[in-house]
Length: 225
Image (cartoon, rainbow, N blue to C red; front, side, top):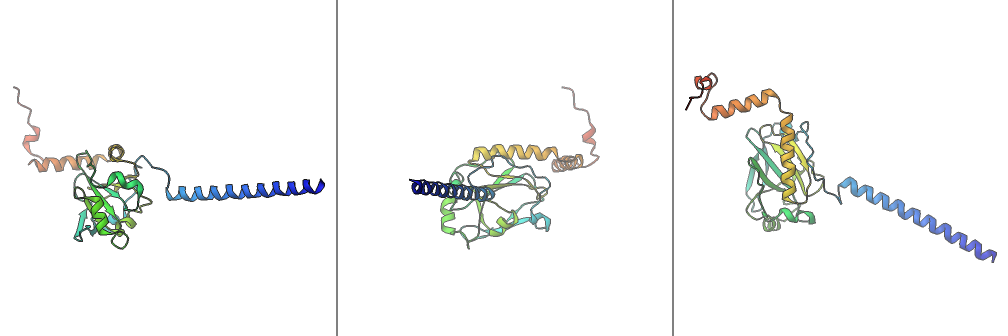
């Protein structure tokens, strides 16, 4: 009887040790998945006016790569108007399904969506061509993934075409949520624009319309009907 009690106690101790080990292992797995960004969607763009891609930092003004058909392409990312939305997708990403096949384009004026995959050393051009379709520009460039420090897929980076700066970045489950995030990122970035920057934008728009600084037409009173 006494021996049975001892054996039973040893079994209980072993079970406790086993369960503790499993819990510790499970916690470590969750921690690593969390650090990789797995199992969740960051459904908001992080406004990041201080963050600038190294493309802009080193003076480059374009993203270089190839199309799935093998043509070289250079995408301007600065010294222009509007924004470019880079959608970093992968053919092996189950969550990227909603963004392939040109399922829809963003309904935002002044925002140019572009799909960016890793290069031909990591992706099949034929598979990317099949998934992407022809509606959205698709660029294969591992360099772009490195430059923008893409943590997981699907991932999006919103670039201000005027400065080449990243003004928002994050992940989302579908285009509708991406649209919402882009609107908020543009609005947040606008709050950080200086008076001088806004004045420069106005001056540029006036120049495009044929009005130079000091133009007398700017100071005329509107005619009374």
